[in-house]
Image (cartoon, rainbow, N blue to C red; front, side):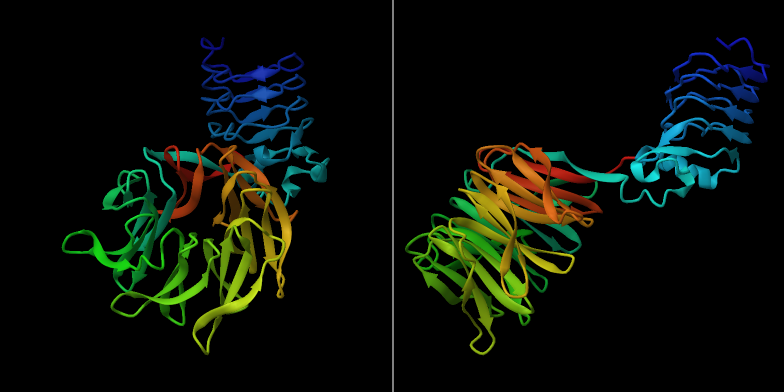
Length: 466
C-alpha cells in the first residue's frame, strides 16, 4: 500500500477500526518519522509489524485494546524518541517480561504502561513489577534419542571426564555400555558385556579402576573390570551362586572410606548379601536375612548414621543400621503399615530427607524423616506401578511413576503446596527404571522398557516470555 510513498514523513491512522497490524504493514516508508495509530481497536501486533522504519522518531499506539506486545517488536526502530502506549491495559505476566526489561534499557521516552493483571499488579505500572525470574520459566521433557531395544535397568558413571551408561538387556542377554558423544551429541555404543538374562548392571569406581557388577538370573552373577589394554570390560570375578540366585537390585555405598555393594535377592533360597572391596576383589561380607525375598535395597544416611532399607513383598520394609563396633548391619526398625512395597528410594530436598515407596497394588507413598521416624506426606495412585524414582535437575525436583497399566507419570514438587503435582505423562511400555544423566550442561532422563524401546528424554528449560 505504501510502496510508492518513500518520502512520506507523517502518517495518521487515528480513530479507525483496525484490530490487527501484521508483519511489514508499513513496508516502503523508509523515511517515515511520525506514525500515529490512536483510538483504534488494535488487539494484536505482529512481531515484524514495524520492520524497516529506521527513521521513525515518534510512535503512538494510544487508546487501543492492547494487552501484550510481541518480543522485540520495536527492535528496528533505531531512531525512536517517543513511544505512547497510554489507554491500553497490559497483562503484566511473562509475555510482558521483555517489555519490562526494554523499558529499563531504552533511551526513548515512553508513557506509563499500566497493568490490568495479574490481580496483584492491577492498575499498577509495569515498572513496579518486582520480578519475572521465577514465574517466567517452566520445564519440559522431550524425546532426545530412542534406543531400539528393551531394558530393565540403567546405571550411569563418570570416568576420565566422560559420561557412560550401563543398560541391562535381559532379552538380548547384554549389558550394553554407552558413551556420550561430545560431537554428535548422542549416546553411542562403547562396549557390550554378554551374559544370560542380565537384570542389572552396576558400575563401581575404585580409584582409577572401573568395575561393573552384572547380575544374572541364570549362570551366576559376575563382576567385570575395564581393561585399558583391551579397551573393553573383561571378567574379573564370580559372585557365589549359593548366595545370589535371583538378584533384583544392586546398591553401591561407602562407609568410612570403604567400598561396599549389596545385592537384594528375591528368591526363597537366596540371601541378600553385602560385598566389600579388599583391594584385590569383592568378597561376601554379610548376609542380611533369610526367606524374605527382598526386591530392593536402599542405602540411606539418617542423622549421620548409615542405614539400609530392605523392601520385600512378604513383609513391610525393614531398616538396618550400621553398628560401628561390630562393623555390621543390625536390625533397627521398620516402616509400619506398608505391605507389598517393591522398592524404596531416598532423596534430599532443602536439607530434608524423603523416601518414596513403590507399590504395585494400592497407592505408592512419599514419606519424610521427622528426626524420629518416616511420616507420610503424600499418596500417589499407582496401580500396576513397578518403579517410583525421585530425581532432580537445576533445583527442579521430580518423581517418575512407571506403571504397566497406564501412561508413566512425572510429578513435580510444588514448593508452596509442599506436595508433588502431576506435571507430564509419557508413554513407556512396561517401564522398569528411570535414571537421570547429566553431561555437557545438558540433562537427560533414561526410561527403560521391558517390552518396548528404551527412550532418552531431555530436560529443557522453557522461557515463557519469548
